[in-house]
Length: 292
Length: 159
Image 1: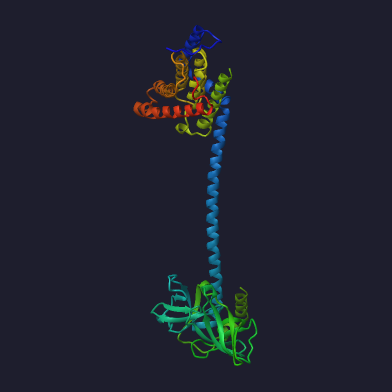
Image 2: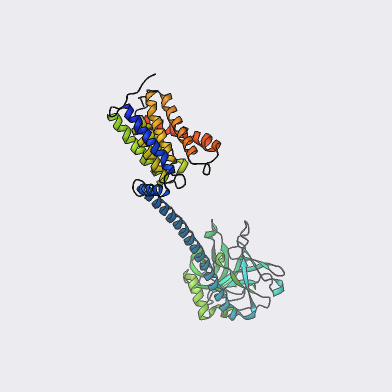
């Protein structure tokens, strides 16, 4: 049987005796007075174990702070979400106030309606309004907002109607400069992307010059739209054909995607609505829309 | 002398690491029982009496955090210290088999003795506490012990 070396500091007998004494002391520890046990425990906790206990306390504090940060972050996210919702509400509120102002000027001829967009593929440029035949809405009725022309009604149901806005490829409207100096046909010109869709005032006479920023309104010719609904502002010359015709790009006054509330003309329509937008407030709204 | 000093440095490091992991970070059973590994290493360096003293100190340190079974660790670690030192009379300790067995049996005996000492009211079932978790903890301790000795370049030397 191999042996390991004995420690040179003490003899085997001394070591054995010491081991026996320590073992007996250890055996006495569990049966010692509770006060003594507590004193030993407290002494060790306050000395040798103190750094480790402090470390645990700091880590626990750190974890609690991390949880607090998570909680605060969640609260911040909630506040941001709520603020975003309120911004949408404020926007809707502003639009409703504009419509209310316009509605007062329009009288019973126009009905207020809420715009719904299906958002499904193929339904671009189309919208639903919550008024229909029972409210006196007819096919082809103009749909306007406080800023100007949105589109027209295509299909009427008893309590709802389907309309198209000016971004639809089939959109056409007879237009003219607000001062009546140039007439043409306002039509949608599709870009490669939907964001590139523009309006064009087409077929104006060559000798009539439309100034940049000039307001274009519906002319009432053709009977689809009444005279005087703002459509857009002259942006640039698009095309000059020979010496007999010009066309102009228009800056639309209405962003159809942002419209949530509109006025729809009832079948008791007339031929001229210029007064609805030609008041000071309406002009300011149109100007601010153009600035945007 | 240098070898002995290195062992004591390792033992002190193991004690600190044990309490950092178990008390500081609160890892519980997820962390290895470095205190027992340290005691088993220290016991091979000293005589029976000194090993008993080291075991008693280590046991009291653990008992200081044990509210209901104060003294159970003191008795257990003292006994393990004495037993570890006694193996020096029986084995040279230069084989890998011995070192692995030493750690496995040492840790398992520590768990068994502690299970016996804590009293019936606090005991978990023997099968789960000693046979199950105790065996796993023994293998864990042996793995860590061997890894430490290998890192210190003492894998093939006498323990």
